Length: 308
Image (cartoon, rainbow, N blue to C red):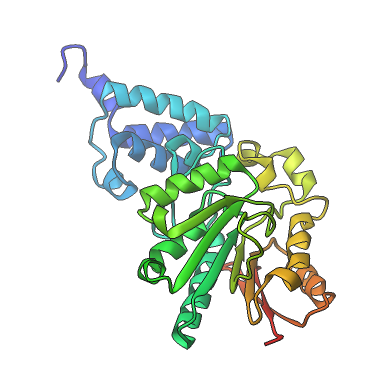
């Protein structure tokens, strides 16, 4: 024990006490998930995971880490997302770097990643052609990272070609950092581009388009509840009904999606029928199906080009 530390002070720095105090503080501050937030921040201060934290309630945090924890707690009490405070988010079995340059990966976006992986795997099994995949609006690069890690060998052998683009250079920089940390930087082609325009190497006709575009309504974004106030509005604001950017992408599909290609788009609650109508109004024949998330919400719209 340090001469400056008394037993009572040490008790205050024990994991169990810190967790209880942090939970109470965040509850009072109005956090929607105070216990979870407290567990994530206290375990991060110890440099451990939540399982370790619960197994070691008697562990004592050193003074320097305790000071950092106090700062993190105030930031969270002010509304800043835990993922930005820690600098990463556990998502889809990966640790994705996160900060204010891009949206924080959501649990529901795992449905999009699973759908993309299943689509690519089916095409690889079907024939020997190279599968061209384009992650449009990649943001932090989370979905493209999941795809790259799953198909690392196929990418290295040029059986899959993976591109990731975003209109925001800052977001693309964060995506690049995630690809580097994930060991797949050499397997992903990056470009600043507005949806499927301006990739810089002529018209591309991808077989699989992946898109998690802004779909929050402008009114909700302007109110900026909770963590939304800290995330980039460019990645959230989908216009009055949330579908402005999605409409633009759907309109590009007849000219940009390969024959027999598929576009997979994440959408908000209640938006899937509108996207279906948009696709039905195009000059090419498209088949539209939906994939629900764990809450039963139609979360991913699958648009297949049928003119094969």
